[in-house]
Amino acid sequence: MSENNIFTSVESLNKTIQELKTKHKIGFVPTMGALHHGHISLVEKAFKYADVVVVSIFVNPTQFNKKSDLELYPRTIDEDLKLLAPYPNLIVFIPTVEDMYPATFENISVDLGDVATVMEGKFRPGHFDGVMNVVKRFFDIVEPDFAFFGEKDFQQLAVIQFMVKELGLPVEIIPCKIIREESGLASSSRNARLSEKDKETAVLISKSLLIAKELSCCFSPFQVKELIRDLYQLSSIDLEYFDIVDPATLKSLTKWIPGAHACVASFCNEVRLIDNLQLTDNRTK
Ligand code: PAF
Image (tube, rainbow, N blue to C red; front, side, top):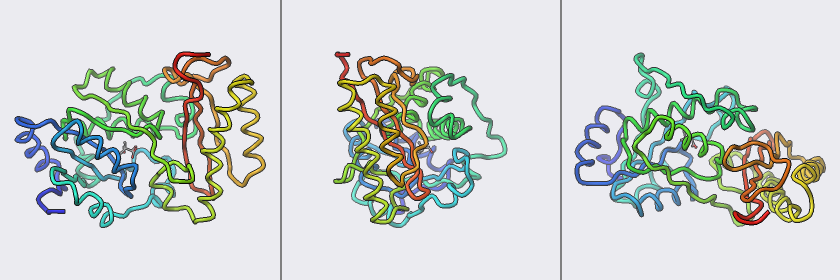
């Protein structure tokens, strides 16, 4: 990757963006690094919408509610740059914590309501405030026309969409499909912390979602959740939550609705993994 395409300072990136913006559409793919083919699929999608794509690599400390999780988050900057090298019109932005959060930085406050208090919000207090603020800061610096977010972080996507609407930000959010390993395990930077054996065990997470989808034909959401929880009891995976929610409000469902979504968070050998799947189609139920 040419050094000309790598920016570490907010000021110089923003200056370049101002020049580019006069002629080009800007796509933005925010990441915390440890890139894998899921991220690359976001980059490739971004090039379908924009002729210049900015990829940020920044492990954002304010969205981690456990110090150990932040410290153990994989950091593979050299490999990341190699993966991004084949894309000519791509800019990599690798800011420092000080640059992202200068003394003058002020947190935005948007009442995210229920979208941020259930599931991830319940188990990771403050997480979505951190995500929302860093993404808003990036939007101010990169000024993208389009920003790309993976559907694996289903609730994060809902939070960002809510924030963009609430603040009337001039950026279009493009959701991107979950990319999976051959085994079904959802691709994640955190998978780098799993041994081969852990990866085999973690396949239960995607399997449990598929089983829930099958069970949705004949059982209520409550019964499906009970059956799936029993399944986890028999494994070495520590289930944090398995919920079936309305995709619009993220509220737990007692009855099936079109597009009902199952979301799961669990620990495999202390590595926190999340996944989700739409259980019922968009018209029936
Ligand atoms: O999904 C992530 O990797 C992060 O939450 C994001 C959007 C890059 C913000 O730090």
